[in-house]
Image (cartoon, rainbow, N blue to C red):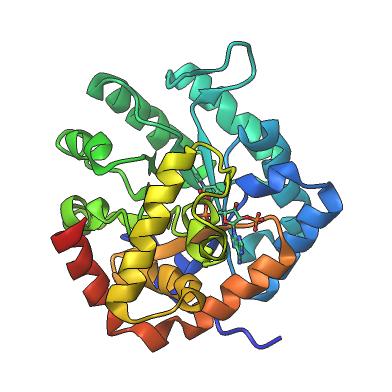
Length: 309
Ligand SMILES: NC(=O)c1ccc[n+]([C@@H]2O[C@H](COP(=O)([O-])OP(=O)(O)OC[C@H]3O[C@@H](n4cnc5c(N)ncnc54)[C@H](OP(=O)(O)O)[C@@H]3O)[C@@H](O)[C@H]2O)c1
């Protein structure tokens, strides 16, 4: 297989990450041998960035990555997240240094590795004080060689903007960014660039809504989508139909457009795709390869967002 993957520097880190990263939450739902095949196939495509979290599948996804890649550990970049304490019921957020240190050790064990390339906090601690305490722990974990870089996974820019006023050593931010959610480009990316913070974009396909396949179904079909209500799905599909009409493009172009758009901002270093299906991975990679075809369209999508959404 010819590798057509391109790589970008991630902020101020020394890491060169594949433009497409593989999200692994979806693999938690799959049988072990199928999940491993997807990871192996992704590596063949040149994907070197694997995004996971200790809580995905209650440790299953980290263990899968560990088993699959233990012989080629140095060739891949592992991003994992801690902060959701699933070790005891009820599950809760815990950003105390004591808990985070324990969670990191458990992740290292499951991942069969001595180091985590990028450790992300799975959400934002409530106070800056908590952040500063954690920042001290992170320095120690780095000195011990257990983690190389750290950062935070957030849902919206506001969660991280306040923190950046007080904490200046964050190296990576993972955030949703896609054709209909461009707030990070507007309010966060230039701030991140100033601090040389690397950006990993997620939800670029919005749970599969941007694959074009759902447009083929009637808008009134009862679409089952995790975390998104039927009404919201219908609204989003209508926005997509309007956008495609505006661009004079077809639904077959949507997957390429969605992947290409996320990568069209040079401040995004890697865009995650989540899939538990090998055929879908192949389709996503084909779309990635074609994404430069639309290079002039991406600015129109930015304009459309600013003027109509
Ligand atoms: N930090 C956080 O809080 C957080 C939150 C959400 C996600 N994440 C990370 O981001 C990763 C990606 O998740 P996301 O929410 O950003 O999802 P996404 O990549 O925008 O969409 C994933 C969905 O798209 C579907 N899909 C992908 N390619 C497809 C194709 N060619 N045809 C049809 N359907 C296709 C997948 O279904 P199939 O499995 O059937 O292919 C899956 O349901 C996760 O795995 C996780 O690593 C992090």
